[in-house]
Image 1 (cartoon, rainbow, N blue to C red):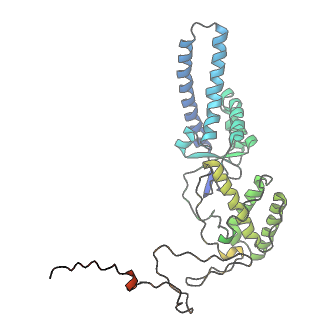
Image 2: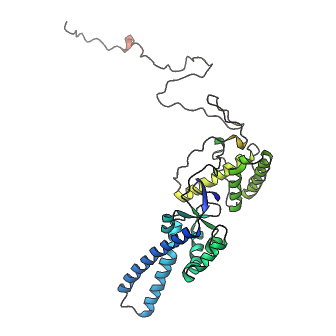
Length: 331
């Protein structure tokens, strides 16, 4: 069982795909690619019947490379690891840290797949998958990817608690390009299991991970933020960037629920207790909706300058009355 968090900021408990399901997905992909290759090749042969044999051979090689090699690479890149066969079998290709793959991952998998799947009829891929503990073939090993199952019921075992709301957007300016995937995976695994650890062990692990993360980003960890909350906030920022990169800059990110007390922020305040912001964070009172009656704070009394709930129109003054015209209505 592998507990991963995808790059679209969705906490899932995923397990590596087994060899039978992966083999079925590969066979479906090869069948679709072969049918497309035969259809296109037939059309090209009919259209280029007047060319010499060398030109027809060059076109055949080009079609083979484009359809049987470039086609799967393009499909996995555009679908973020879901080809037709994997979509039918409920599988997906992800990075080692659980994030969505990019073009370079699909390119390495596709080029090595030509050797271990097409040229050896899948013998090398089967042997590599049987030897690997997570069922990875050589293309996955060199590309740093993993094929996982998506159709797994969502549980709370691999849930990463969100950071405190007052940390939202605080680390938007950090440079996360130098943080390796192994460190992200260690942070995710710690956040999912920190409530099961001894408090002292959890605190020491959070401090060590926060120090490593701060060293990779080049910015020191803030002293007023607990290490676990710092890790969760930076991880959420990274997931938000992955979501914008995958779905565009207009992707909406859902607001996180209140942070638990495990981050060192104290026990959540019960209903009715006013919110007290942390030191250094200005408090902005909520703005009532348009048309809502004014309700003074408790103990403040009614201010004479506050608007009333129902304001009666003022009585007209003599200056506001229309001038007399001399016309009297009939009795």
